[in-house]
Amino acid sequence: MPHAARPTVTLHDVAAAAGVSVATASRVLGGGSRKVAPEYEARVLAAAAALRYTVDASARAMRRGSDSVALVADDLTTPSMGIIVAAMERRASMAGAFVTVSSTRATPERQLDTVRQLRALRPRALVLTSSRFEAGALGGRLLKELLAYEREGGRIVIVGGTDMPFSSIGFDDHGAGRAAGAFAARSGHRRVAIFAGNHARMSMSARVAGIVQGLREGGVDERDIRIVECEVSRQGGFDAAARLAASGMAGTDAVLAVNDVIAIGALSAFRAAGVAVPEDVSVTGVDDIQLASDVTPRLTTVSLPLARVGALSIRLALARTPRLRRLVVRGELVVRESTR
Image (cartoon, rainbow, N blue to C red; front, side, top):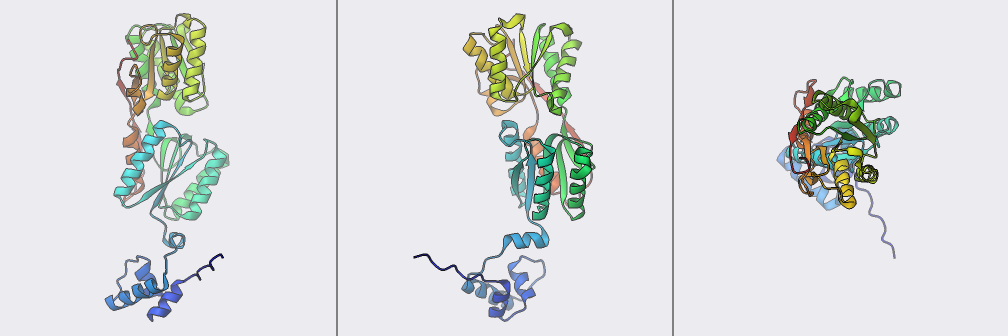
């Protein structure tokens, strides 16, 4: 036999049972800042316990905002995003807040829909991560939605490139690529394949441009630089390297990937094809995810301070006295055994 649903107990019921006003009961149970006399507080708590009253968290959020920080990201499955989210959660927990996450698949329409839905839930702050947020996207509708949320008291921090009027933390992707290219040239490599990922992503195209600049400044002839687009995944790197190996390598002595995941896929493909790394070809990535130091050979990469950016985004979002900040973080070359 199904059990009958327990009747909903309201704040009015608790107030009536305690013999106090609804406002007094709300101050006791809603965590308000105004003090209540101890005898009234005891009566309200006793009545709430007897009636098995539970606070409606969603209603509280609608009245005064919640303690959540909402992260809106292109893709939550990448290792680099995992590092950022973990750091965000640690920092938010220290401040008495928590992080919720949403994925938009890097489409402006989904970004707009997600922000609209989150705005109705009134999180304390929004942290938006993408390779690029533009004020003119969707005819300015996303910017309009974000400005409305800010007027309602919300905070906004953008991780990535943007021309929007909010605090932001950007990565020097061009500089990271240039460091990788310059090191390859300095190490004597002269025929280079760049595994470029998806050129439509601003961060990827900036890294490619930086790699090319670093190579050319180091004396590599532009005719000997080959740009190979591939899926931004381990499989994308594996497939691109497998095709290169099947062609006989065409004299290529270095592969520079725009991120570590692609580079690690390339390492696997070269191993399967009998191409020795780094004896036959050097491999370099960007990001410095944890797996970069666990693979064999360990991956040379440009380390980006992903965890620091995650923590910093929360610090900016929860700052007591917010002010517009425009920050750019730079990477650092980490040389390991995948390059000669």
